[in-house]
Length: 255
Image 1 (tube, rainbow, N blue to C red):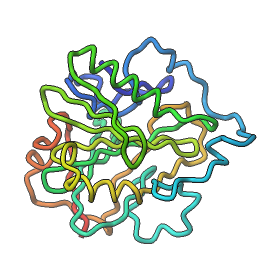
Image 2: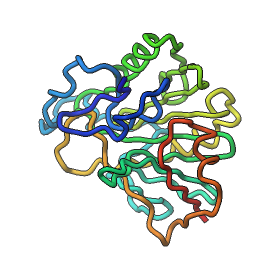
Image 3: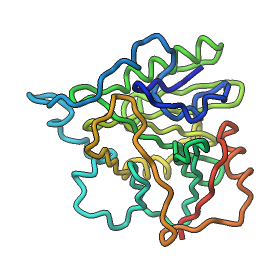
């Protein structure tokens, strides 16, 4: 089952993955193939009037749009997502090997992780409510549980499968949607989740100006050599112990 539907013509980075949980699906934000999401046209319509995401002020404590950031100093730029450069932060990158594309970045801290992906979205409406319902519906169809809770970023989805618990958070921005998935201890322990939530609060999303269909994955890039270096640790432990569905991670440590 695909846990992230996407715009027409895009290719899943994990078409061969058949998993019990949605953290590894990386190219479209919901479940099911019959919703018509693939026929959504590219987002080229101008927004106007009050109440659109383009004109709505960003929440005080929320990921920001790149157009609202005056300088990229202090950020690790990974394409569509800019991360605050925190010393000791460990990153893994999920790759579509067939196309040499980065499909997700995962921030690892101890026995907790935060997976991050950003997607194109319509100008005039958010998509998190739809995505959340689709993920929950798909999980329940498989016999897993999915419950909603209110958190600092709004409604969050807590899913429990045979593989463990994960917590989905989402933020609708101007023409983009940012999804985070807390796994490991951070999914159930607020103290463990706090540093990752703080990092999520200070993220920046660079939507770019290219026309894209809603739910298309915004491009990610690997960090430059001068801002990060590969570690000599055990990649299998860093990724698979936290998220057994992570595939082919590249491990990077911020120094």
